[in-house]
Length: 221
Image (cartoon, rainbow, N blue to C red):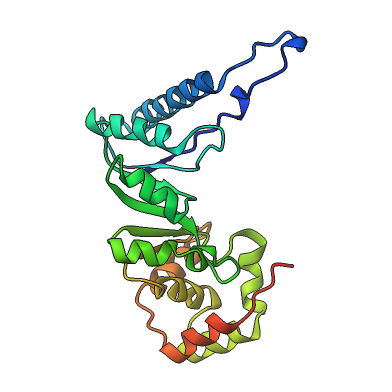
């Protein structure tokens, strides 16, 4: 099972004393952020009805808190037996390396789809492949309105017809092809969507067709 912890410390930002509210120092903000991580973990344990979370991920790096401080808290939770494995999300290669100096990172969950390819361009997928870290690709078909746009691209229509499947399945297969450690996690509101995504797991697309998607531009507007 997986539980991602989203830690936000914006509400702990320093504020002007003139309005009567307490000013919270950076050190205090870090302490509150770490407490929030622990609180989220305990809440997840209660919700899941377990004493250990299999994979616990830092959902987003808080710009007000050094990454190392947040990761140290995750390492503590792992040593305490409250999580088996630790992962990261929405991170760069440099941030992954910094975290790995503190704890073993088994997964990285970043966005990857034909519209947004920063995980490829910034080298995160390549790094995960090289280091044998599972890359969890969220929003593999774009999400929301962008997912609905996929069938409108003529290339995706042509490939779907060629392989006897849907544009969404073609897209998930393309994402999966980006590395042996890449695992797409598409959402599914309907049973047919779940079946379509599952079928994409067995879909093999020819290299020349994958290259067509590589070269295609997918505007978001």
